[in-house]
Length: 139
Image (tube, rainbow, N blue to C red):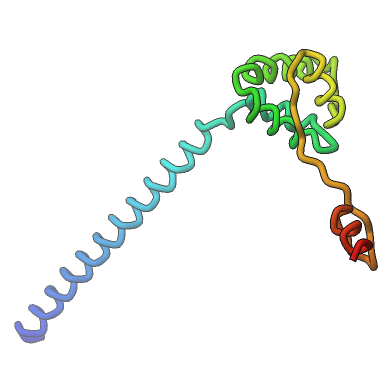
């Protein structure tokens, strides 16, 4: 071997060692980032559902619409009533609440909640509002 080839091989070996060291450093960084993410996922437990979420899960038959109307009309009063209703659900004294039942309850405690309603009639496979249907018959 000539001194030139020996010198070339050592410089190639040194550059290969540097490349391998860089790759190992990148792999270690990726592994530490991945393990940090894993530990964050494990430490972050899902937050317990809010009172409103508990109530929404129990509402059926347009109950969510009644709740939204009541909250927009009476925000202060609903901040008091929602946790109370959620407590009843947590205690299993109430399982489901329909929209009509919620509306009756709210009216019984003195909250006049108005819910937008519409009457639709089926005509040729399509639903048409009653007002449009009556206009068509006039014309």
